[in-house]
Image: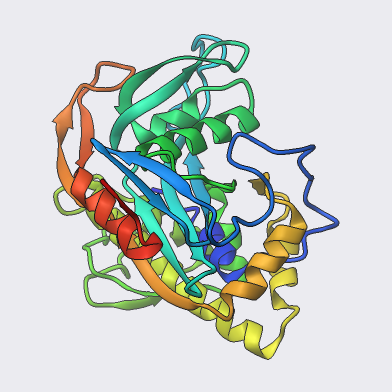
Length: 330
């Protein structure tokens, strides 16, 4: 699943702060945008479908990526052996309106994924699942950057300031850092654990988290939709848990960071994360949004095997961004 990175995400949303002594700093602007906040009044241009739109609110977006190793292929061509981005979520912050929102993207979204050569340079695109963008690249920096590019283009060229990545197998460390996250079981997951029966309320043990977030086969219709719902529930409850403890102990987030510093990767400067955290703690949380579309089976991926595919509705992308950024245009 996750995705989900979920934990990371939640922690990210909550505000991973003051990493100064841990985070490596970029040498300069990256492909994901210029460092520093977008100033209110600065015009941002997007092209979604056949529409060209602009917004002037001071909006910044950050991508949370949850990876797994299922995409790795021993013996694959050099530069094409990364992991899949199973969980993808944007944290969007509107400093003009004082609001923030999480937009969860379906990893099966069919889009034009950038193809990188052995030197990490883009040589074209291929209509594939969005999660495959993380498969291309010589190293994690290239793979994460390629995923950021794919998401940005999917959303009409939306500027994305940076990424925060964690492998799904390390979600147990996130869960452990907060002492376990409580969830209400909605799907029949008893094949994973007898205690995960529909209607039960469970505080997930560390060894249950990855399965809870990633289980897909043998669950309902086997689609990604139910899994995404579980991921959102986990992250929201994680967010609520951490923010509640932060109010009692402002240093709590630093304790969590110490526990996770060895398993996360980010190109975001510590100073920006610290400022971001301080701001969103005061902003209105609009919760989670998803993009509507059609799910079906197809062979539109690198291996010619039938996979789940999700085709997003252009109007849903427009509506999702318009509600938050105030898009206007033709």
